[in-house]
Image (cartoon, rainbow, N blue to C red; front, side, top):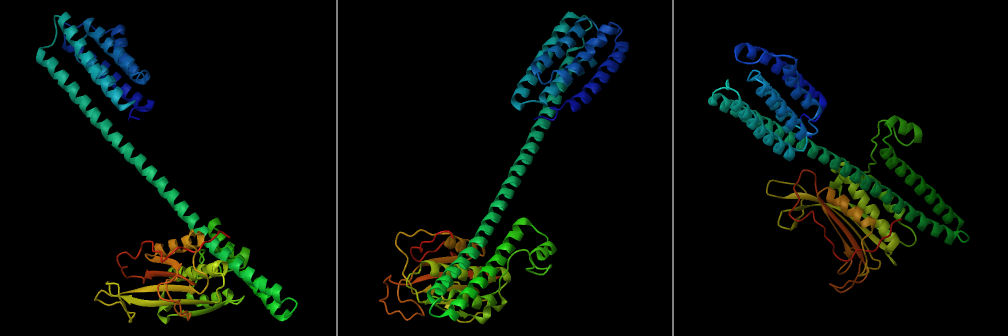
Length: 449
């Protein structure tokens, strides 16, 4: 669209042209004794161009033709030279500033040539024609006016294009934000449900197995199921509270879950890991947990990443590590000197050393099948770790399973599966290549819960 595509700006310009044409022609008539006095026919001819500007600009060829014809008739009839030409020039400007740009330019400059021809013809037919220099000056001013109008049209087009691009970018940002939020919520719901339902399945199997032989242990399994179910419902409600955008006070009053000033986003800390490990045990599976005391200062967001990685890895063990009896969970803080070697101290200093957090979950179950495809759980873990500048490696243990007492020959891929996540400590710069995807071997197959 051009600046004059709307009728209101064209109407304003038409009024200005009508006043200039009529008042200017009255004055020019007094200054040109040989000119024919103005009458109603002359005024009607002067008003043709303003009316064409308002009514006929959507049909630019007709508007230009009518306006130039009226001006030509006015001059040939012997009326005063000068102000009458303001009407056709105004119509040319109106055409140039409206409609499709390329067509507008062609019609406007073609109309300028037509107007010049009409003026030359009238000058040839009248004995009181202005000097040739005056006619050339008028033609030059017409060209200048059209060039200025063309630059205004180009600038308006650039502004409109910039606004459209900004609108498209804003829509894309909103769409991306919505997609990212959906993905985040899907990860949260998947992690909660997969872990909790797996724990419930294990405890239910224990309860059914011991129901007749050991009612007390069966009762403990049922109690664990109830506790796990309650915690899962709490976490799902917290996630759904974020989706609904419930105010904190309303969420607290509706669910009696958290205080009114609690954050709407679910949060975890590393102090919850022992309970998570305890819930994962059962059915012949033992879990050993080792947490580096240096992780006590880890921010909540990164602690949440550690929690979810451990949670999903344990869920994966229960669901897919057939024959697993032991799982080793380690959360440590180590230092890298930028050359790939680890150092024992955990302080970042000025010689290029930067701390990093390493989460390792290793089981002694069956390794990953060669044709396995990554499921939602592994993808979710990788997305979480990469969002904080880290990397995730998951696959069969290539040699003896660390910490599990395996005596396999180094380099063989027998029993055992390891998930290893590494991300930089806040405020440090990760090493080159630490944020890409890294797989130690084929991922264990997963299915959505």
